[in-house]
Image (cartoon, rainbow, N blue to C red; front, side, top):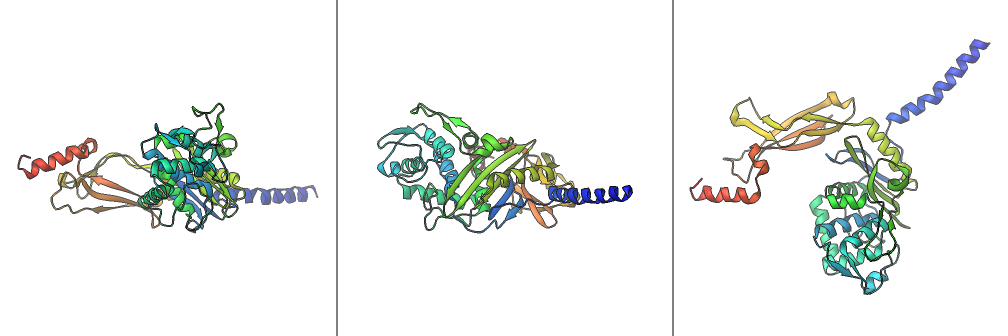
Amino acid sequence: MKRKSIIILTLCLTMLISPLQAYATSKPNVSARNAVLMEQETGRVLMEKRAHEKRNIASITKIMTAIVAIESGNLDKKATASRKAVYTEGSSIYLEQGEKMLLKDLVYGLMLRSGNDSAIAIAEKVGGSVEGFVHLMNEKADWIGMTNTNFANPHGLDQEGHYSTAYDMALLMRYAMQNDLFRKISGTTTYKADSRVYAWGNKNKLLTKYYEYCTGGKTGYTKTAGRTLVTTAKKDDMELIMVTLNGPDDWNDHSHSFEWGFKEYDMKEIRKEGKYDLDSGDEETMGYLWEDVRVPLTKEEVGQLSERVITTNTGGLSPLSSIVGKAIYTVNGEQIEAVSIMASPEEKDRSYFDQLIQVIKSMAGAY
């Protein structure tokens, strides 16, 4: 009888433990309607759910507003708060009409406090008008490759023709995080503007409270969009981006997805910077990789990685056409990285102007 009891107890424990083990290796079940988990360095999508469905996105719109403002190069200039800015509904940094504030401070207010008044003030300063700034936002979206996105305003309040997708917003965050100042602002927990006597606290609780590896992000909410959230996290040498749209339990969606990603994937170095043999070892068919090639892989995928090379027929390589091929890396048919193979290591440190001078000399017969 005692033996039977032990067997039954063992079976019960097995049934309890097994689902937990299965959950640890299976993709997270998120509450959000739409979700994407993307690796920063390569842009590889590790997990997705209705990633390309067009949705209202609320205040995560302000990621685009911030990066356009930062790239304008006018952060040390002051913007004047208009009546339109001051009376914009929703979240606010409480600008007063006629108040002047540094554009840099407005961007902090935009990202940390989600100020809609800040968004309008930025748009009017950088774009000349809200309409002019929205045009810049859509130009940047096209350049990044956000093919299922259209912006109609700089703050994200519900408006016809204002939409994006989880995947496109991950692309945007990946692009924005390559800018050092954006990365700094996104990861700031508190900030005091020169014209304020109190500091702003970041609304992103994943950064300030819930997840130790979080490095930044942006929150959002409207009745139509629901809760929207974009966050980034870094653990060891891997950085991930998580996007959720209409996610009622978004803090847990993000922290659980990050933990799954960090557990299942490792950044693997698959090629070292240096010479790259395009053919048979002949010096004339040598190219050059300017950087080490690293990709996120599971343990199972390490043995499934394949590489192929596409060479570029330059017909006599010019100094301005230094790409001689591409190395394509795939796992089970999925392309996870593509890197350019360059003609020479010397090109790496030469400016466009230097290369142009060389072309002119060549055309003049002096090269």
